[in-house]
Image 1 (cartoon, one colour):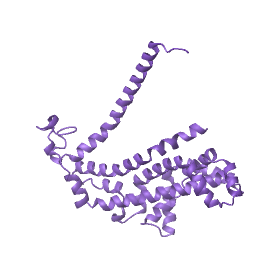
Image 2 (cartoon, rainbow, N blue to C red; image 1 turned 30 degrees about the horizontal axis):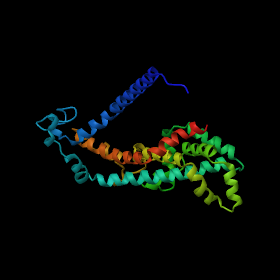
Image 3 (cartoon, one colour; image 1 turned 45 degrees about the vertical axis):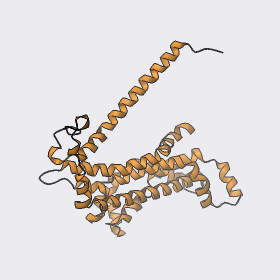
Image 4 (spheres, rainbow, N blue to C red; image 1 turned 180 degrees about the vertical axis):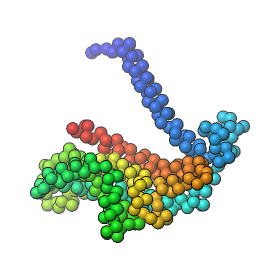
Length: 291
């Protein structure tokens, strides 16, 4: 049985040590803006620019802990009414993400596994729609929403985003790679309907891709800044992204208040990513693994 030479073991250990050192360094660099953001949200406006991160003082580690407070968060939810904007964003992003994922999965499954006249033309149309910038569709979408009376409503925001071309083609490829035709034929022979086949057999097989697309769609809807201002006119219906932008004053800007609002906008997305990180990574790598 061949033996591993000690110098090879030492060399491998050195490579892994170097690799992990680089990864740790990159992780710390990535976390620096978040650390600054959180520290800035706790500093009073009077000492906001005195220190880069935490204020100096006589406390532990030479930090003035007594100078930190949650006044900015109190002002956000009591004076600015950010609870309403937060609920607006959660509702809009959640409904858009779930429905867009479901409809895209259904459309992709139909294009991948059903044979009907015009299937290739529809697939080519979906591919052509991928190269159209979203900004070019703002005016046509507004005109259509005006004709259907959907302006100033969340319906006008959600319906145009139900089946994005990227999602339809993404789930088409995921279905082709992950769902075998033999399983579908066996289910049909056993008497399963198409709806039952989709929800019982297809969805579990493409679950990683669904988690990844749900996260991407949720994030896109959560950060939707231009589209919401075009469709919505009532200030009480605006999402969190628009409300944070409105915190800027005419003659001065309270940066601590803006930092606190940014922290509030980041936390729900961070929680969702932590819950779906396994599916997100699996969805991104599934195409590379299965070819």
